[in-house]
Length: 349
Figure 1 (cartoon, rainbow, N blue to C red):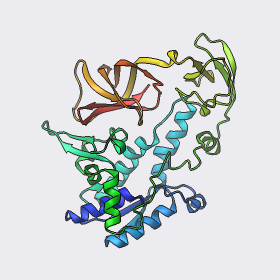
Figure 2: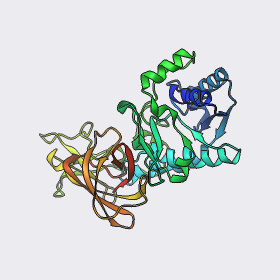
Figure 3: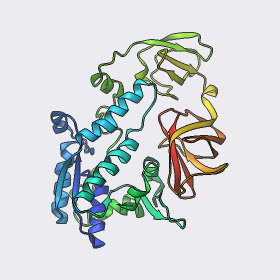
């Protein structure tokens, strides 16, 4: 329970369905003073505990705070910093879902006698005709969160409940208001929860011993165009805030940590039909053979597009899109859909 409206209503819905519900908030914040200052209603601060505890009391369910600080630091924060230092743009929510919420929390929950974990995600879990479990789109496209859940395993899906996926956001808020929950109108949390001010580069500087050095902006031919502030300040596809004037809109095309260079170019140069990915996880199928046409998303807010996927190695896939895509970003996930269900996905390389 994050203290937000979605997980709160999820607990209520499951209790109404006859489940024996226990509320859990995961303690993942690293600094108690900063956590105490957190006032934005996110999922990581002490205010989340206060809100979740009040909701649990109103629902008449037991409530506990479980400490996952070490798991979160190892699997999410350290990963986040390492990826940026290597010139990639990570998605920490995907890592948190797979390795903290669904690996560490699920194990601890089963150890104390639970049968399932449940969340307030806008997604649905279905068992398909082939016997496999898959994450499927929620009834509301606006809040659909399947992209960030593609990496869950069959074992994890078999032991997970997602009741909110059957409702729209407005319906969830209406339920919360009807039953008098104090967080009915609480705003949704935004951005990365552990970087409260949105300054990713500042967070990395504060939490690493590595020296962040300036380097060169270059074009695709290697010509030096200017000086950048350090590669952690940039991501592929970025156009604003580059601090360089070339007489045309410039986009980050790639980041080269080995030479400390940021490659920039035109909008046309930022387009491609080809995406390679590894660290694959298949969901609705055990694996693929030959070429398979799917609908794919290359980032959370990507509208999606058709592509053909084919394995080109034991753990590598080539995606050929039917239309050119902008800002294919190493470190982000590419997620494949077969109809409404997630077929699988991987990490863009």
